[in-house]
Amino acid sequence: MKSVLTIYRKELADYFGSKKFLILLGLVYLTGLTSIYVSIQNIRAAAQSSTDAFVFLKLFTTSGDVLPSFLYFLSFFIPIMGIVFGFDAINSERNSKNLSRLLSQPIYRDSIINGKFLAGITTMAIIISSIIMIIAGIGLRVIGVPPNSEEILRILIFIFICVCYGTFWMALSMLFSVVMDKTATSILTAIAIWIFFFFFIQIIASAIANAVAPVSSSATLATQIKNFSVDIGIKRISPAYLFTESITVLLVPSGSQLFLRAVTTADISKMILSPLSLGQSLVQVWPQIVVIIALAIICFAISYIVFIKQEIRST
Image 1 (cartoon, rainbow, N blue to C red):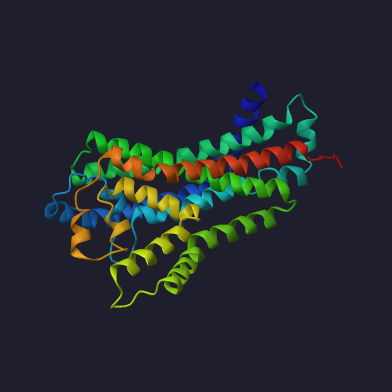
Image 2: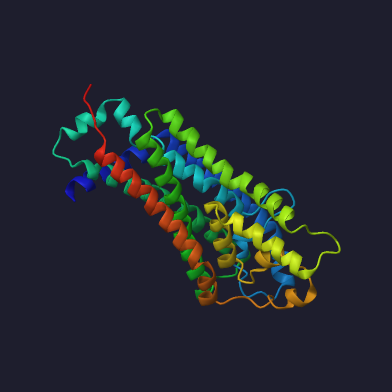
């Protein structure tokens, strides 16, 4: 345990003093403050015309005519953070011969990968929670509407989900860092997988759904539901979609964004106007959260096993 803490403190010091941390921090803060500016410009009118009890949550979900909401920016940058903190965790140490020197000290091999992993999670948690707290503080000062207890709990759970999602991408990129010798190869592979899950999976899902159940102006309700079921079933293969789905249900309690895309009839729309309680929202999103956490554990477990069994030479 002592050696894990030693590696953990050393990696934290390296992260906080590195250029990539400062660049990521600046990008996340810049996009976050830009999104809060857009939200503030639109939230006052929305708050006056809406009877929604969750006005404070609109800080994170309100978008403008040109710029998207803070949720979109966060879903875009969290995978980048995870990849940046994990793609060179092991192979850079191996290529610079520091890994063999480190193992020559009284430090267990598993302490190295555990310390690096925990340091990456801590760094991401600090970045994510700080920008969310900054946005909440600015919003509280500007709109003058304090959050109620349920909104505070939703925001805390939102931070937890974001950290879990970032942990998955860091575990995945760390896996490539363990199995691949070159840092350029590991980061390109991780970015390629992120691009596929973030962009191309939606195109593939829509194409397959339209081929299985074509939707036209005269399509029946059953055909629309089948098209939606196929589309969302394929999209749920992507961790990016699972993350977006979970935080949407959590921060938009009405859940209309998820269901109105499937059916547009007035009868179905009336069924989902009442907002979900916190317990109901958690019931809706816990499968997505469990899958994201499980994927992160699987990726790290494979990285751990491969790293423990690898041969590390000093020359």
